[in-house]
Length: 150
Image 1 (cartoon, helix red, strand yellow):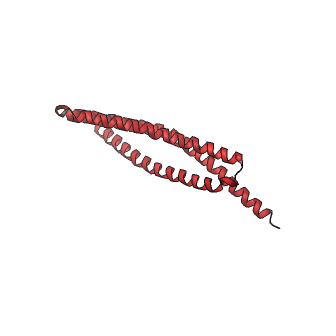
Image 2 (cartoon, helix red, strand yellow):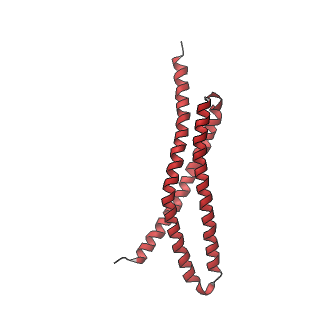
Image 3 (tube, one colour):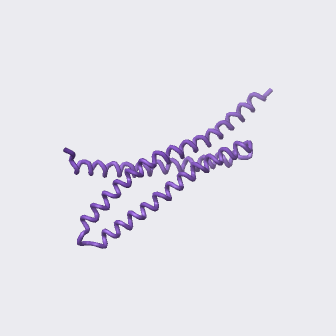
């Protein structure tokens, strides 16, 4: 027999952990984007056109996916707040409405976690690919400088 209370507690813990993990990941991603653009703007004049456009396209795809994800989540967070506000407007049935709201939010958070795996994979893959182009340009320039020395 399944203990429903235990399952609900586990869902709540999972939703809470997901929220913290995503907040941390967002900070790391934003720092990565800032770092990329700092390095990219510094090196841009020394990169070939292909390197500029290739890395630019990849980082734009990565950043676009991340921004679309954040907008998507913001929409659903606002929907959740509206749902909570609706529950608070009905005090005689508040306990049931809050329980229903919390269950919906836990389920939504778990679903977001599943979607986030794909969004995160895409943003990391395209972001690291853009960084790889810059790293190649660094290594190529260093190799050329030191191998051309008399």
